[in-house]
Image (tube, rainbow, N blue to C red; front, top):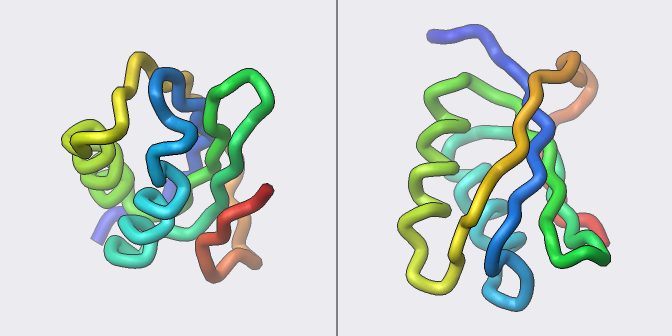
Length: 92
């Protein structure tokens, strides 16, 4: 099993009003990834995902295949792990 990583991501495109936060939350639960997601005022969606790198990639692949979501870009950067986190939550 791979070691965990944590990534901060900002999703751009048609990502608000299309169930994006609920879809990413569902996928995070399915792939045992923790973190959080929230809508931003500029129309983007901000998230932090923590888990095995291959699980995070599976989530991103499935988001890209959703018929209502149109991802135009993802800003990604690795950040320190949050060892106290044990679930995925939808914020704001």
